[in-house]
Image (cartoon, rainbow, N blue to C red):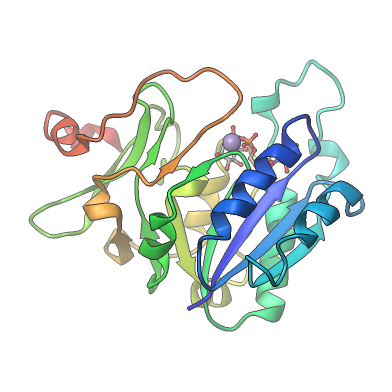
Length: 254
Ligand code: UGA
Ligand code: MN
């Protein structure tokens, strides 16, 4: 199956540097269709030029769209901190609309432009039947966010994350992939404009159960994607996730 990689992006100092890194990562992945969606009123010449070098050469298909954040959700002044704004929602919704119109089969993954992807994560997600999940490194106070797999059943039974909040699915956008079928079965599933709750509300609107989640990355014990960002990190992620979970009362995590 083709993996449709949705990347929201916006103009800032590091934009072209980060898109170059991601483009080169995706150049190592077979059967990828990259959907780059700018948070802007029109496509920008710099991004067009960058993508042009990869289309049909190292990356099979690239679709370049734009979907500007509606005015009421934009931060028009410095009184709204960056993390209180919904980031990437309008552009992801533009991409979801494009997929529903143009794609029958495949796998969908939301790959933000600033994360770091081990190419093995694409191998892991490719056979996603409904929804697959795995850990993400460099998230929050524990340095990792991850589904917790019950070893006796093989099912995801809880979630480990430094901030559970009001969420059923306390996971990062980079932690899951879905089969296109699930989008067609749930035509109203879209990204919400509530900062911090995009993943949770989107996943809830896909109407699956914990048993539908296909755990990847060695039963969610390996980190194959990193939530790198221009900022402070709180903790070094441990690859020994299993022992971390074993010492945690996971029932309290949800
Ligand atoms: C975290 C999650 O990793 C995001 O996937 C989620 O959208 C976000 O929280 C949220 O809940 O709003 P974080 O790393 O803090 O994200 O945010 P960024 O990486 O700065 O932004 C996420 C994506 O949206 C990036 O691909 C970025 O280029 C894009 N973005 C950001 C825009 O398109 N417009 C903006 O104004 C800001
Ligand atoms: Mn980010």
